[in-house]
Amino acid sequence: MIDAPRLVCFDVDSTLLAVESLDFVLTRKLGPAAAEKIEALTSGGMNGTLSFRQSLMARLDLTPLKRSDITAAAVELRQHLTPGMAQLLGDLRQRGDQVRAVSGGFSDVLVPALRDLGFAGEEIFANRLVWEGETVAGIDTGNPLSDNGGKPRILAGLRSNTQYSAVWMVGDGVTDLETLTAGAADHFIGFGGIARRDAVVERAPDYAGTLDDLRGLLLG
Image (cartoon, rainbow, N blue to C red; front, side):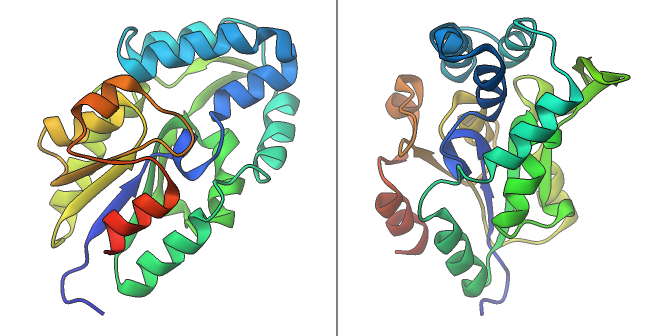
């Protein structure tokens, strides 16, 4: 065990999970013919050509989503954990690190899969859907994770509440990289094992193209 724990925060979509969770929900509802359009909107938010909120709202505008769509997708999402990630998280916890999931995805969809990865409820930070009866009516725009700059705010809050030896962030998108550029994270690792984002490859001080690369950077 180490005296002061390190805090290692992980993005969820295309990092802890081998898919983008909202895209998974939408493709499941609309079918594979819509996948290219959905991916273009997602990539805009991840590469920074759209604001993250614009990307979220544009995707949600593609089709009305019912509670049954979300519930069924959340169950299926448990089969899409990034291979080897559960073992890496276990090794980090065994080392004495604190781990958190910090996501621009929606807790309504993500929580079952994240529980499978060992995250307790208070270790999960994610967006929230707004409901009108059984239909998704929008997103909670008061949640900092609903737009750019949200992840730095979450990490800064975690840092202020607890003493850590260092704060690390791992993720595939520019909203993850922002944690470093805003000074909320001491270290950032871009992860391209699921999705390669050129803007992150070009700017990340450390980049892991595979899970083995990520393991090496986190555990030595």
